[in-house]
Image 1 (spheres, rainbow, N blue to C red):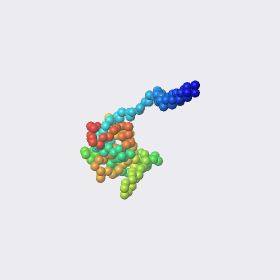
Image 2: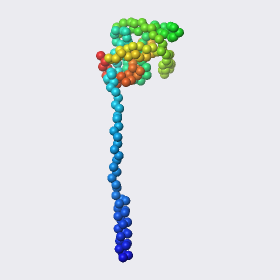
Image 3: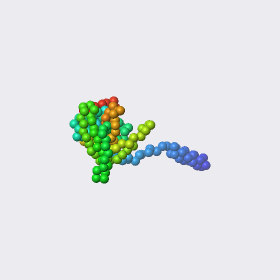
Length: 177
């Protein structure tokens, strides 16, 4: 009897150990579907490093340098004159398209003054809002007014115009023609 009792105990212990060592199948809970939001389509699509932009109401486009590193856009102006109108700061200036000579005089309310920091110096610039035609869109955007005669392009288009509107591929150029 004693032998039978030991055999039963050993059998029970072995059965218990065997059941402990068996891996039980883990059944995962059902994972709810997750909606992945893809970027909305960009109205202008893929654009290049140089694109035409119209400064309205001017009739001919400017060659614009597309600069994703620039927060704001900038434009080359001449004859900049600050004045006051009805207690507010205003500015008059002339834009001349260097490619064809078209000239237009503007008077705009000053939105703000900004400081452009460079390596050796900083420059204060007036910022105004201009209407531009870029691709198939009319955009009301802020531009800093600058003397860009040392630069190859009279207009620099920054992220304030690009964000949500275009993807930039610097290997391309003139995709908006």
